[in-house]
Image (tube, rainbow, N blue to C red; front, side, top):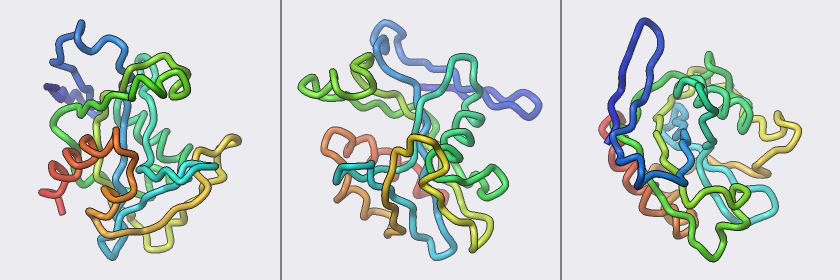
Length: 173
């Protein structure tokens, strides 16, 4: 469980998970981006057939919304002014990385991720996705798909977290 604390223009996420149980989990933000047709952005990880939403880690002492905007820009080239926040999850959603692949994922440092999800809407029809913005891009392809379609493309170990997030965010559609 998490609690959102808002002070002036800053929003902080305070985790209510038992800290001992959450050791080894990386704090993360994930973004579901809507276009004007109500389709959502999904991206393919470079050199694989694995698809996912833009997402990334929260740096130490970084505000959660700052992390979201930073990751959105790094991964798909969208700036803060390109999107509006429609909603976000009320709690962090956890997934575990299978033990058989942990050594190859996130440098082998984490057993999973704790994600705060944002539903974003593109402000301009012509906002363009740029997967090559970062010197070492994570994605090599993107597509706009129907709301529930990503569940058919996501790797199995993330599927339940995606289902939970989409279920919670759909109230904002």
